[in-house]
Amino acid sequence: MARTAATFGGMTTDIRWVAVNAPPQLEHDVVHLWRVDLDTCEAAEKRCRSVLAADEHARADRFRASRQSRRFAVTRGTLRHILSGYLHTTPKQLRFAYGTHGKPYLESPQADVRFNVSHSGGVALMAFARVRDLGVDVERTMRDVGWEQVAERFFADSELDQLRALPGDQRRSGFFRCWTSKEAYMKATGRGITLGLGNFIVRVDPALPAELLSTAEGGAGDWWLTQVEPGAGMAGALCVAGGPLEVQYFETTTPTPD
Ligand SMILES: CC(C)(COP(=O)(O)OP(=O)(O)OC[C@H]1O[C@@H](n2cnc3c(N)ncnc32)[C@H](O)[C@@H]1OP(=O)(O)O)[C@@H](O)C(=O)NCCC(=O)NCCS
Image (tube, rainbow, N blue to C red; front, side, top):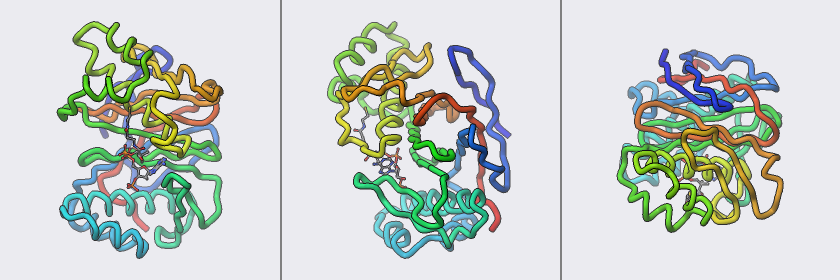
């Protein structure tokens, strides 16, 4: 059982990633956030691969590096195991379909469970809720992304202004707050990069709660954005349609039993 800190509504709280073998009941007023170790043992990888559909096997096989192939297979296999737990079915029976911009959703069985997945290095975050669309993002903060150049290229002007107004020692975490918030919102809408990175503005200050401040199309208040602390050396964000929900944190290092 691991502990990590998160900030909600301006208050820092101590959150727990609770290790469980099977998904607990997914109620309507919560989001379940799962942290998954993708560099898992061979047996777990095998169990994940054993539940993949043909197109997922084909995708796993297309990765040149075996590590990438394993991480994809473990992500998808674990997603299937968790979803099947919520839906009281078997992982293999799930059928996914994809939105216009590639967002996976459950085609069969038909259910009100929504989900989104993000991976970075050996870690994946998976978010689940009932009815509400959502998006999640995780990034490794230690890797060298040349963040100043990336910010200048991709952030909206007002986000750049917010970033530059931060004290020097907070700019790197401000960059990742902004990046993960933008990704989580883009993924929640399902439109990804086609949304236009300059067409919406998020809060950059890492000392304040994450927030979607405005969008070119209006309706920023229709989305709830919150930061996530996935663990040391990582930043994350979660975006959910509608108002705030309670977030419950789970982790698994092996797939849940069938
Ligand atoms: C998918 C996308 C939305 C995010 O990609 P990413 O950050 O590289 O990857 P993540 O690990 O966070 O997410 C990948 C997962 O998102 C899901 N996904 C794919 N397309 C999606 C979409 N349109 N909307 C939501 N989720 C999507 C899939 O489950 C995918 O997992 P898989 O590859 O195992 O199937 C990508 O298409 C994109 O638009 N990236 C923008 C990159 C960028 O320039 N960001 C700048 C931020 S300032």
